[in-house]
Length: 220
Image (cartoon, rainbow, N blue to C red):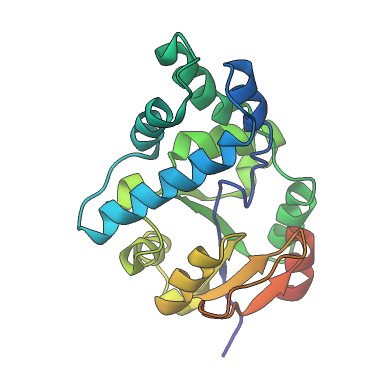
């Protein structure tokens, strides 16, 4: 089997560093640890809607979850919600992303994103990093009509790129994303920056790499 021709990047956490969101929570009087719980809760609700045959925008779910999770001590809850959500437009990429992306393009690979969030977030993130022009498409489940890890989300990417699913490699830090992509017929790369444990119940990734730079070396 020949190597993949299109590298598909997850956006939130895979490309973007979400850690600064914790300061947004602190800024509205909530504990920093709530950031992790909130993000996981948004994914849970998105997955549940997908399983039920429905869908909703990441931002809309995120807003509702914030209203539910913010402590009662936060007085202006509406303003607090917008302050936290606005943090997504100020995130930066992980240090390995820019050199890795450029190395992948130098190797002749096509690059796209596929996010459970809005394309505008990816647009802002990659533009700030100076690598927007390296990506030919910034795709979102908002266009696909179904969240990852549903198989149709990955098939949507293949259709938009005019290739078979076997020509795609899904790159993510989330085992649920690599597992879903593998079950849909894609090759996968799990980016393990922190030496984490990959769950045994999930389909093993085609490649496990410590960084996007390392992935470029593998695929090139």
